[in-house]
Image (tube, rainbow, N blue to C red; front, side, top):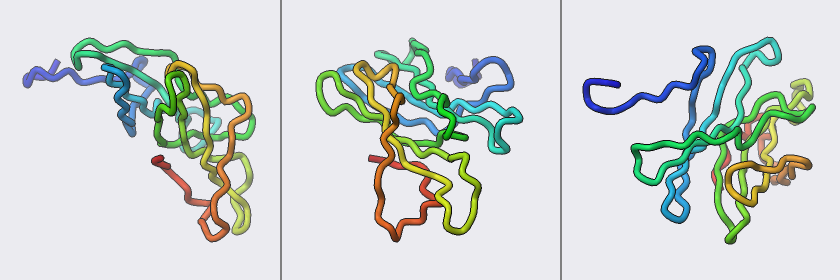
Length: 147
């Protein structure tokens, strides 16, 4: 607890970091999706995935399971994105993904992907849809999509 009365959030254990909060308001609940980052030998950038917490009063927070995990063979790291609700029970999570494809001048290194959820808590990435972008778009630098 800081002297100002604000509480500072730090994921545990100490090897974890929180970054790039993505705010979302839905039916009286304020959600924060954020990048949960940890370092290991898998990637020189560290591992990023979408973590999630929510509150109705901005004082009491509920921590949810990982919303968009790093769980495919292709994704090397998940980057910032956005979440929105399309209908009563359809949520979409858009995110950039760094891929395992070796970086060369003509090889796509990052992609914008979409995952779906029925509750805004757990997103389905069984077959993440990769968004088609114009050919003049720089496919090596498509980070942090906001829909």
